[in-house]
Structures are given as C-alpha cells and as structure tokens.
Amino acid sequence: MSTATAIVPHVEAAKRLLRDLEHNATMAIDTLGREGGSELIAAVEERGALLNELREVADALAHERASGNVSGHDGDEVPSTLLAEVAAAAAAALETHEQLVSRTRLERDRLAAALHRAKQPDTVAGVYAAATGDPRPRTLSVTG
Image 1 (tube, helix red, strand yellow):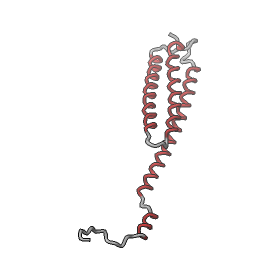
Image 2 (spheres, rainbow, N blue to C red):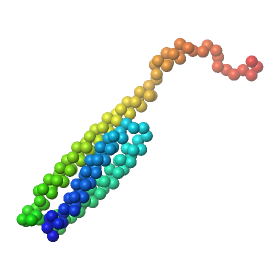
Image 3 (cartoon, one colour):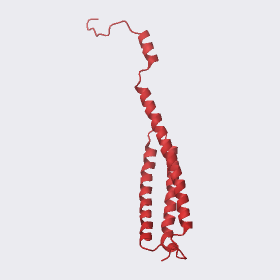
Image 4 (spheres, helix red, strand yellow):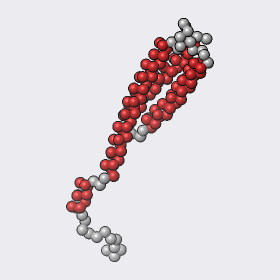
C-alpha cells in the first residue's frame, strides 16, 4: 500500500482534529471571565477528548511508518505535501493554544487580585463605622 493510500486518512483526521482544537481554544478564550465557569470547564473537557483522539491518530501514523507502509509514489518517505499540511494545521492549533494559556493566566491573576482585595479591610467603611459609633451599650434588658 502506498503512502497516499496508507496515511491520507490519518493525515485528514489529524488536520480535522487540529482545526477542532484551534476552534475549541478560540471558544474557550471567549468563555474566560464569564460567571460560573461551567462553559470553560466544558471546553477544557472537550479539549481533553480532542487531544486523546489526536494521540490515537498520531499513534496510527507512527504505526504506518513503522510497518513500512510509508513510502511515496517514487520511493520517498512521507510525501512532503502531506506533512506540510499537518504542520500548518499544528502550527495554527499551537498558536491558539498559546493564546488560550496566556489569556487563562491573565484571568487567573485577575481573579487572584480580586480575591486578595476582597480580603482586605475596607478603610472607608471602617472610618464611617468609627464616626457613627453607637454610644448605647448593646445589652438586652428584661426589665426595661
């Protein structure tokens, strides 16, 4: 079986999965900063499933190569056009992945700063509380 016949289905599957990963990263970036985070969690879980599928496709490509079914029409190794297509799809997926990682870190840092600020005492509220302190004792009297 020639390379074109043996690996084209795997190359096409890899390109599809890489495009899906790129799209998934874009969608995940769009969910950052939204309340709840359930959409981001769903996107991350979908991303994990896509990566598992991609690993299986990569394993199948490696198996074809190891079994000797990978020789081009004129005896060359894997046709360079097929590899170039996968490489281009992988580069695009990697770029959006790096954007997702960067934006996720920014969101994490923003939330950590907000949490830190929430733990700090409110100085304005403290000033108002001190200025309007109630001089009456706060005890309960049953006799009046």
